[in-house]
Image (cartoon, rainbow, N blue to C red; front, side, top):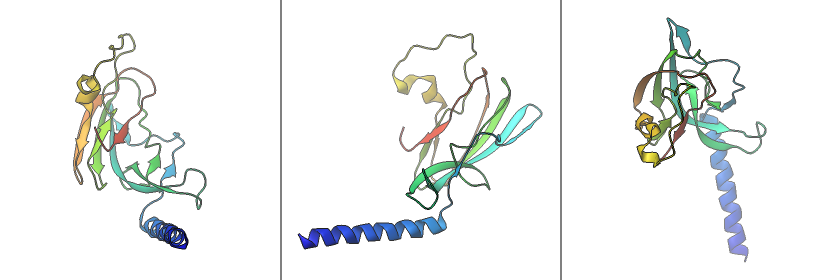
Length: 165
């Protein structure tokens, strides 16, 4: 009985020690209040440079419980949760460059034109054959991909990364 408890305690101490070491070298993900748009808008094109990288996230309060997460950041800035805000007028072209600084391949969804408000949504089908599957960016470790698209209909949309397709 003593050995299992000791092993559990030792593993918890080891985990806490590893977490504090990781926290010293990994940036903290900042809370994005979605007030400041990312990138620069010039001549009808929003240029934005995003980077997917690991970060420490404190969901409740800095210094309390933390998680290591994959987060988006504008290159040269702190990671944000949710990721950097892409705010543009309808129909503006977006040129996004995405760098994968994580240790695994990522799949980025949502960086594509949106249908016009007057068009009817397509019926649900097999997700591997939808327009979203054609617009998914697969970005290997260390790679950089660029995507250009028109923003489409006015509205609020999201983009995200996944670790599997």
